[in-house]
Amino acid sequence: MDKFRMLFQHVQSSSESVMNGICLLLAAVTVKLYSSFDFNCPCLARYNALYGLGLLLTPPLALFLCGLLTNRQSVVMVEEWRRPTGHRRKDPGIIRYMCSSVLQRALAAPLVWILLALLDGKCFVCAFSCSVDPEKFLDFANMTPSQVQLFLAKVPCKEDELVRDSPARKAVSRYLRCLSQAIGWSITLLMIIMAFLARCLRPCFDQTVFLQRRYWSNYVDLEQKLFDETCCEHARDFAHRCVLHFFASMQSEMRARGLHRDSAGRGPELPQMPAPLEDLDGESRKAHLRAVSSREQVDHLLSSWYSSKPPLDLLAPPGPWGGGLSHRSPTVALGTRLSQYTDV
Image 1 (tube, one colour):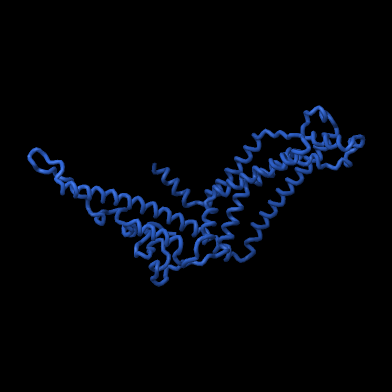
Image 2 (spheres, helix red, strand yellow):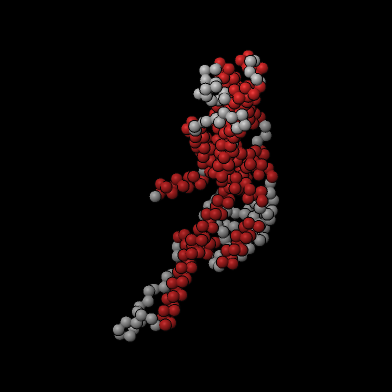
């Protein structure tokens, strides 16, 4: 159990590496899906382009949406973009950096699918077989335009009787496949060159803005994660106190009514009242959680967190947040502490 807890904590503290792992996993799943997909072109002039382009673009769109859904930073980015300003101004540069990071990871699997489809060539041949210029091939000289269109629509289906063992079909298929592979390799080379230039030229420029945006984008993610963890901790402690309060009230009620008396007429020896919560040690002594002790206070705390994030200044004078933002001792309008168990 401890190993699973340590693994979970590592996953939470390494969100960037986890997102990279999910990105690679989606890319691997993409390769597996494409290799196991059974491609069957309809070989009809009206539907070839629709089927080919649909197979080339629809799965990448689905994979792109899956990449956005599995990336936690996409939700954090939207929340940061739409949140009220409150005591903390919104930096568009941080939102652009987070958007760029999310898009880079989400586009990995779709690009893998598109490149595989282009290098394989089947989708491209099916989609553009009817768009080939017949004048480039001598075999169509003796055919009427309607026969040419019917023949070109049957090019992806090499087992069809009309085009079986036809040199013209092989020529058109080879032409389109070579064109598809040329486009695929060109895109691959362009991406490699862009990545190489970005990696080599970035150290040549001032890194101050990049480091600032990277730091604050990680901060926004960690801050929301720590707030959620603190809320879970408070909910558990709050439920524990409510249950103890219920048992204590029932004990007082039983004493007042004189219930469960024994044969000698004496009331049963009531269990000893639990020690006051303030006297308990360990995790239960967190005053910053215990001070919020009613539903109205919890609702006000959550509303204040959403509508007015604390300022990013640990040395700020006492105000509505009692001294600015600190994950060690922040306070809310009710004078209650929020979190004291972690640092950023």
